[in-house]
Image 1 (tube, rainbow, N blue to C red):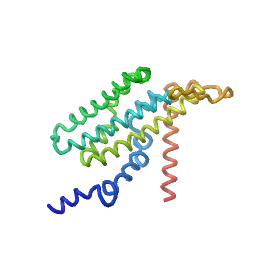
Image 2: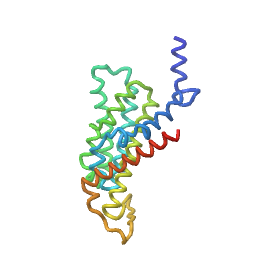
Image 3: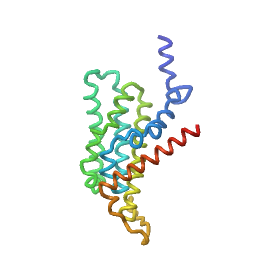
Image 4: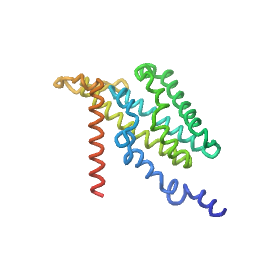
Length: 222
């Protein structure tokens, strides 16, 4: 019993937060096992809402919020949730955070809410969120679970942002964000293909190729 108490007390103690697992967990979620570029998850949002950089960033923020919140509560309730109904409980928790974010957009950012349409609500079915709740939050303490949710949400948000930036720049010749309008210049002729569905697939493929090239070169150097 004494050893058990010692282990539980020092799991987030002397060797760093959560035994030094925080940094490893964040790096794995944001880079090593990036949900978009490596696991190729959440493709629906990556293709549907990235025609504008601002849309992509808001969707990324939404996923971070839902991942962190749902992972926290799944972890807190992991010891009292019956195993047979755990997935029902996880979906209910995820849906709660999705609704909170959706209502926030409708109350304070109505134009963005209209542009994103049903895709905020579809975060409930996003396999990234459910996967992290089931694979990590259900077996780990709250701090580590929140870090994992933040890492995977951040990695996904960066991927969405890159796709949105490239598509909007090449498709319209400018980027609009938070009221700022930044044009490339009169010399550039916008390519309308990039803001259509084929442009989304093309840009996603480019992102995956670049990400895997950088990851492979980094591993070779090690």
